[in-house]
Amino acid sequence: MVSKRLPIGIVNTFIILVFLGLLSRLFYLQVITQSELGEISSQNSVRRIPLDPARGIMIDRNGKHVVDNQPLYSIQLIPAEFDKSSLPLLAKLLKMPEQELKEKIRDGRLYNKFSPVKLSRDVSFEVLAGIEENSWRLPGVSYAVESKRKYLENVHGSHIFGYTKIISKRLLEELPNDVYERDDIIGYSGLEKTYERVLRGQKGEKFVLVNSLGKVTGKYEDGEKDKPALKGNDLYLTLDANLQALAEKLLDATGKSGAAVAIDPNNGEVLALCSSPSYDLDVMSGYTKADAWQEISRSPKRPLFNRATQTRYPPGSTYKLILSIAALEEKLATENTKFTCTGHFYYGNKDFLCHGGHGHGSLNMTEAIQHSCNSYFYNLMFKVGLELWAHYGDMFGFGKKTSIDLPDEQSAPLPTKTYFNSRYGERGWTQGYLVSLAIGQGEMGASPLQMAAYTAAIANKGTYHRPHLVKGYAEATTGQYVPLSYESRKLPVSEKTFDIVRNGMRLVVESGTARTAQIPGVVVAGKTGTAQNPHGEDHAWFICFAPYDNPQIALAVLVENAGYGGTVSAPIAREMIDYYLNKREPSHFNPETATAERIAQLQN
Image (tube, rainbow, N blue to C red; front, side, top):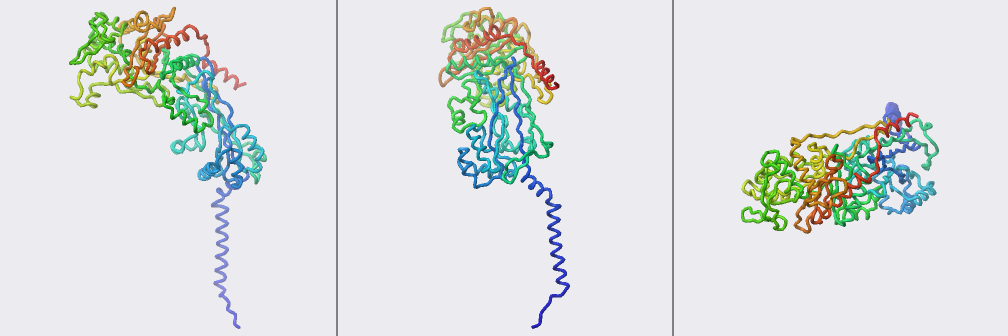
């Protein structure tokens, strides 16, 4: 038998190729994938634990903590370390369906299998104890101490403070990935949303050693690489918590929906902003159960709707003051200009009644404001005209947002000739539309916030301050107080005009349509209004300010389906003014002083 041997050249070539393959693989492992494999190896022995910062708290104008923090325990899992065979046990301990857990773990693997996935937030101590007792059977499962919001018992403030929730996938894709991660908490409404960047703080991280079962065995490099989380900055609010609580109580007592807004006319600081019905922020803090959320979001009373900033009801007779200011400033009328009210005003073939057809007789402007005579302002409107009427309305902030530091504010259009031409065509409307607009009806609307800001400008005789809820904030790292500034503008209206209008408002409360707003020892100036409602009882408005000679508070109150402003809304305003001017405990709290004390504590 003759043996056949391969040529030596082929053998050498084969050996060389094998060695080249081995060298290539070695080069690939040691050089090209060294970083990736090193990270995997490190993750198997060193675990990075992200540390969520506590959000900044909110403090009212008197130093009271209206939004604080309290501990919250969450169960989390690192997908790369978890053993699927432990899934039934974990589901049992967390009282969650296995399929729901599977989906969360799967989503976590797709995002980053070495990053913790939050499985359940705000767990009970019973659940926490069960996880700890079975930790040896649950590799990769641990708990994290986070924080959830804590509120005052007597203040809802749901439409002011707002709530936080887990960041959505859409937001996560839109926001910087070096700031937010999967399962992070973010402000979703109210001040929590507006001041998210101020409140959120900075994330930290710590590194620990773990064994093959995922048990923590100690610190990594003695914690030298750890970075502590930095708490968010604290917000100092303009809000008076006690006045807010009173407003909520008074509105709830009516049994109707409504809103009340109180502003300091000297600077635009919002003292109270109440929308009723509201909702319990404790339900939204931490883990919100699906049935609890559905009860709030699907309620026919719409508690999530902020009636203080989003309603668009006609302001009714409260808007007669704008018409008076326009007529006086344009010298189309004086305070002594008279019209006779027979109880009827005819335009074309229509009869517009004044107070059920009962006439007021001959009235001047001050008396017309005092008794809210519709006929007087019907006549005055045809002297002023649509464009001037709209011009002065725009001057006082109607037809546009106030730009308060709350999200989702709404505003109704302010009708003009251009507006009507656009909506109905040049021949689709007539001067008859002016009759309704003269008394604040028709196609215009306003929110209680807009009405309060407008009233404040009348109270201080012509300075429109942008309403706001936050004075400033204290930096968490330094304790330094950072004041915020808001624009103001002087309105081109004479002091004499304001004196005439303000005097009429004083008489409204003294002997006119709002006697129920009287307070012994305090001169209150106000104006009632009715927003016509084709679907039921009319909505009741009342705007006012006090004291007359040195205004400290301006108010707008709206109660839906309450009929007449002097009956329901004016007494609410009266109680709020009486508390703020007569019953409130004097406070000398100063955010700058408070933060200076904090700086001293940090330095010591």
